Image (cartoon, rainbow, N blue to C red; front, side):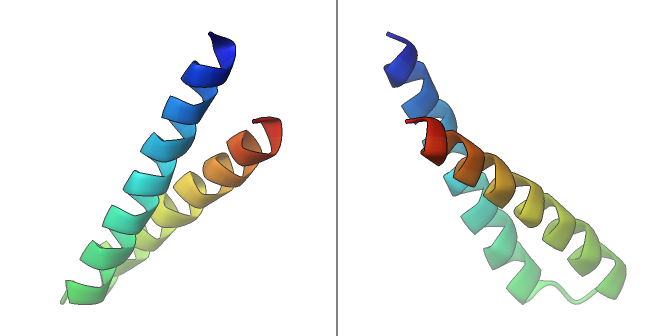
Length: 54
């Protein structure tokens, strides 16, 4: 049961990371691009952390 929850969290963070990276590529504002990059890095680190636990 715990493994299913971890996999769900893993895929959620992976999806959010990719989504923020795509938004960052199309962004015109440099300030918003920096915020999206920070969010993408956060979700990437969480996905790596959860991937190691699976």
